[in-house]
Length: 144
Image (cartoon, rainbow, N blue to C red; front, side, top):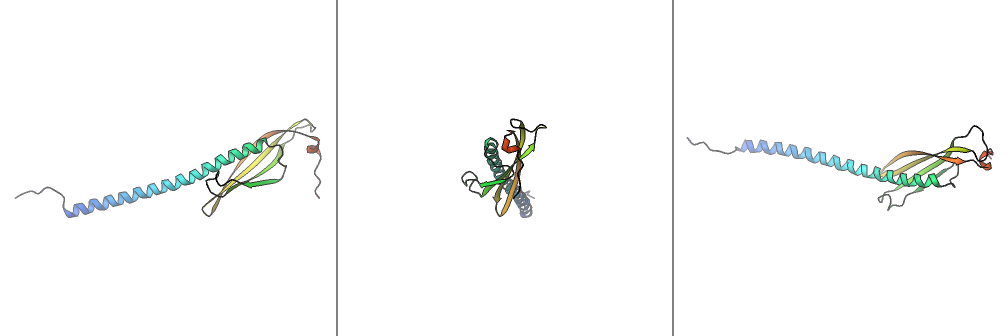
C-alpha cells in the first residue's frame, strides 16, 4: 500500500473558502480606513482654513460689532469643495469703569462649513481679543 502525499480536493476547497473570507474581511477594513482618511482630510483642510480666517478676523479692526459677516473660500484652497464661513464679533466683557481708553474683551465666533457629498458639515471656533474703547463704543445703539 502506497501513501500518497498531498491535499485532497475537499481540503483545497475548505482552504480556498477560508482564504476568501479573510480577503473579504481585509478589503472591507481597507475600504473603511480609506473612507475615514478621506473624511479626516476634509476636516483637516477645514481646520487649516478656519485657522487662517480666524487669524485674519482677530487682527481686523474694521469688523462690525453684533453683525454676522460671511464669505466663501476659494475652491483651490478648499480642495475644490464648496466651503465657507460665518463670523460674529461681540463684546464679551466690559471694564468696571467704562470710559474711552479702557480695555474691553471682544469675542469672535467663527463657524466653518463645507460640503461632504450632499451633507453640510460644520464646526465652530471662538477667539478673544482686547479692544480699546472709543467714545462711539460707549454710546447706546438706538434701534430704528
